[in-house]
Image (cartoon, rainbow, N blue to C red; front, side, top):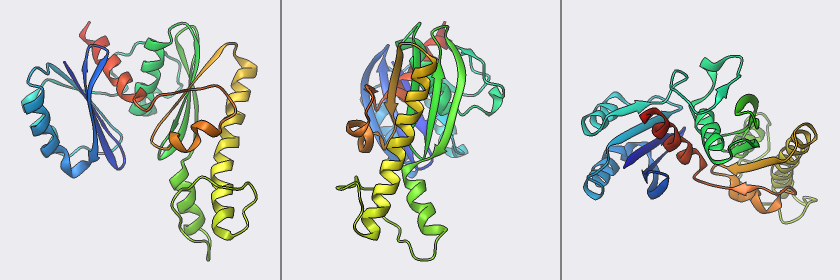
Length: 242
């Protein structure tokens, strides 16, 4: 069994895989890590390997506790990966993006794949049918856009994300919702259209915490998979076993 841990900006995602099969998943705030680790040790005593992906600092105390339980692989740009990395600055490529592209490489072998991760940021990552990662794009996520309107203006309120009921906002709140959510939808559809003009038979993956806001409103055919990053981490761990 494999233990997969993704430490994000605000939340930790933890999953257990038996080969490629997801057996367990939990999402929690970072200060609950040791409590969840104890629970996992009791429920799954046959875990043999562990991989950690962290976009923020993982506390030394938490990490030392984890290493006492399992052999731990910390994902970095030096990790052996199942695709050819053509990124010009591979040492700056985020570990979350490495995991997503790894999942695409394994699950959609010999296909052109665009992975769209809608989280704190919106990332676009492209891997070609030659198994070459070419790069992508990074833009502000949905929550970040709401905060930016509030922070950089004098009177616009800070709102929670909400799908607009009407295209034309008839109040300030509805105008903000329409501008942000529809703006993100147009952005994503625009990226997809441009990639489709360049690459044939494009497979599109939508993932990330805010994907549920957008999935049914996008014009293009997509595969929505909330576990894609975790599956990618598991793929990397399996790849490094061999």
